[in-house]
Image 1 (cartoon, protein in one colour):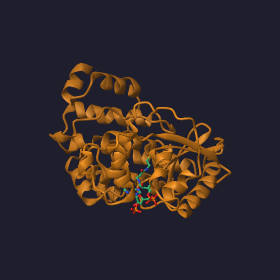
Image 2 (cartoon, rainbow, N blue to C red):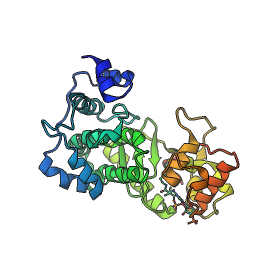
Image 3 (cartoon, rainbow, N blue to C red):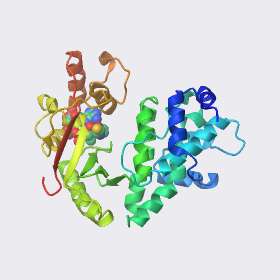
Length: 317
Ligand SMILES: CC(C)(COP(=O)(O)OP(=O)(O)OC[C@H]1O[C@@H](n2cnc3c(N)ncnc32)[C@H](O)[C@@H]1OP(=O)(O)O)[C@@H](O)C(=O)NCCC(=O)NCCS
């Protein structure tokens, strides 16, 4: 196969195509669900009607003119690449970021891959005795991410396409208010956008996790919960009241010595999570909440935000 030609047709770097080619090899792919079943599946995955309509429009029907052979190759090999790491829990890009403005097939290629992997993931969940409720809540992060990406004018997807392979590989679970990523000795906490994170909701979710992991992953031994986030930047204490949910969340953690995270600009991440834009000039950002005002004023003053890591014992706090 001529990888240069594939990369040129896809409008992506040849290294990215080569990586898919190497990691997927000739490993098994997985079929997409039947098109007739797709609307109900998308609904279960919390995909909103406008996103569902686009996904149906770009469906990879055999012979669809929207799907050039290189796109079909990428879809098939991306599914194989992710499937080959079933049970993995590290960050795994499923393939290159595509020029999504070229149409729904390009825009949603990794959504079709996710849909093909839903059965694989639920099978893995069942093998681990995980309830349909947890499985369903976990996989429904797809709809939430698509909705956020739409609000972000499609700026969010390059990260989301990698993020969602955690769900598809059984590496991450949504238990009440928080999501939990399996790891080596620590369980990673993630906070989805689903309303305020009250201390009560966080405590209940942590209790759920304390029971969940020994029950469903008895061979894994966890000693701590960990988190890497803009939410752990102590500078937020300069701006937010002591009883705010973010400050109370921070108080659970012992911060690790600061290390610059590789390939991640915390200022950009704060804009992502607080404004859902990466490109709006600071002067045009909304100032509706205390946090929005704090973030913009901080950056306008020439200061920066930092991505901190912290942890606390499984048994504690
Ligand atoms: C994490 C999150 C749930 C915290 O929200 P919360 O529970 O309302 O937090 P607090 O109680 O500390 O909020 C304090 C103030 O900041 C505001 N605020 C908090 N998070 C905000 C956000 N993401 N965008 C805009 N304003 C926000 C609140 O409205 C409040 O301001 P107000 O008193 O003027 O209304 C929320 O920030 C969120 O949904 N973030 C997106 C997901 C995310 O960042 N995950 C972590 C990725 S590493």
